[in-house]
Length: 287
Image 1: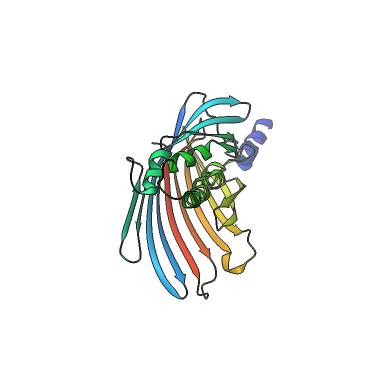
Image 2 (image 1 turned 120 degrees about the vertical axis):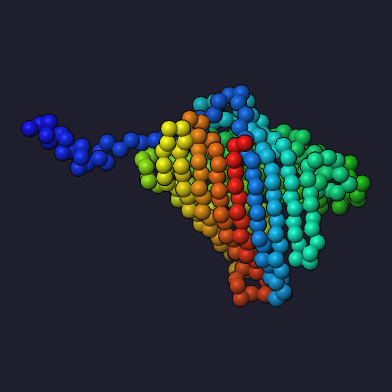
């Protein structure tokens, strides 16, 4: 009778025996991890009632070498290995910038030096970046030797810092690193994360609800839905948006094998003379 009762419990109440899975970063000292990024954007802008469309393609490779592991913290030597940006403008002109070689073009030359200057980040097992060191040196190296008036050089430095400095790096990369739950989870169990998005003209918060979709022999499948909430009060500069995220993680290290992020971002109101709407599709892989 006791055996029959036990069998009934197992059949009728499988959730009592549901297996929890630890989903977190478990990186190895001395090992190098990689992000290969490809991003396609369609940007619709209306300025003073006139609407234009711009297409932008960004390709980049970034490596992270684990220099030390302390308790729940990783100290990573981080370096851009290549950077390529192409822009199809509304007027039909195409712009291309890349890190392949020194260039008379300011942005390409910046990318060239940027991809030869390591910097250092400290990140915990939840993917939260607590510090970014040396990224100022990256910017300084990128503008070194510009034959321009000092005031112009300072303007360029400020713009590049806004785009590639500590706050921008942290905000951009926590989108795909600050993804891990604080405790082990079951299949289809959900958790929430929150990170700040930063640029010169935008301050917003990205709130994401993730759930563990699948657990394989050597991978974990994670799905997320995000809401982007503006931290700005002025209606004309308010940003709203959403994102759908699909990720495949290495089961042992927690590092991203592959990821796909679909984002929609709107600034301002549709009825206003000044308004922008961006659709962005970004993929990441570890090779």
